[in-house]
Length: 238
Image (cartoon, rainbow, N blue to C red; front, side, top):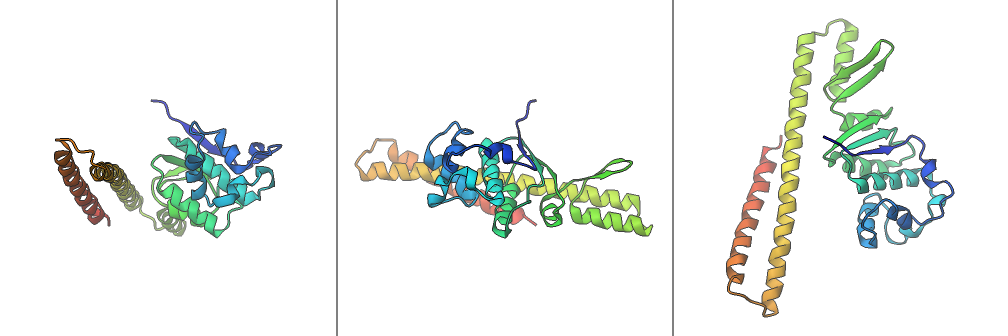
């Protein structure tokens, strides 16, 4: 099975050196869909809106270049994101945008970071680089810190720690499955609403076939079922 990978480098100057393109044109080189509306969708999520998209990339600040690089990563829709110190140069609003984008990302994120807040919020597996090798901890950052503190105090029980890791990982997988189900249901809901609106517009314009009413009834029933599914998935959340 092949996977696609996108990389956020610690130093992104190679992306921008000598380039006088606008933000919008810079994004076009990485996109099959060249339309402005499509590209603005990704740029807007990274706080580039209105006339800002016409700003030359060679005058951007470090934080703006980081946000634009993230917009590129979101555009590529890869299975794996490799991030090297992604929160460097980011202000508080930009960090919040990044947290939200990565929280909703369905793929795998491999990240090197010294930002404890960022790691605490998003990580569910920790790789600690030590002089005697790499320690693979299957759990979130808080659980990892608890384990380290207990081990340093000499009263950590390995079997209890392993159970805590296992429980934490199971909870994460369950929550991720619920998020994916909710996202798929919301996508189906939006598609159904669009088709219903198209049919209602056709009826208003007098474009009616013998199957119109039957199809519309079926779509409305489908819409109700999807809404019920979304409510049930929300109730399953802890």
